[in-house]
Amino acid sequence: MSKAPKAAQSSQLTDPGGSVDVAPELAEGTVVAAVAKVKGNRAVPLEGGVRKGPLGIMVSCKGAGTVKVALDSSGFAFPVKCGAGEVSTIYNRIDLTDDRAEAYVQVEAPGSVSWAMSVGRL
Image (cartoon, rainbow, N blue to C red; front, side, top):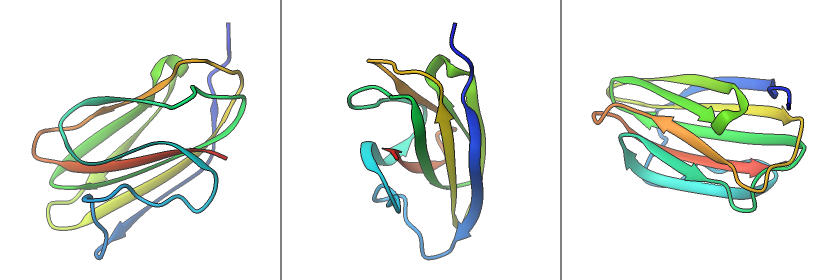
């Protein structure tokens, strides 16, 4: 049985000039998934699965509500509080304890919230 990954770094900011029309840009790493202009729930597959080590997840959202983000069955999850007239962005860097050939990030969002996400292997 694998251990749940631990959050190594987390930060949330409001980005008045931000957008959900494009996937947020990660400052480092190799992007393994990127989506934009999404409303509602979606499971986003990670290209090549995940490897032991750090993984970065950046989510931007706009619209009143909360987006819930979870790394499949790992036990790692976090919420993003979204504002009606502004783009909110959160970045989490987590340390994974094992490799998995198939992995995905599950996002749950109300239909009133638009969101975009990038996931990168660091």
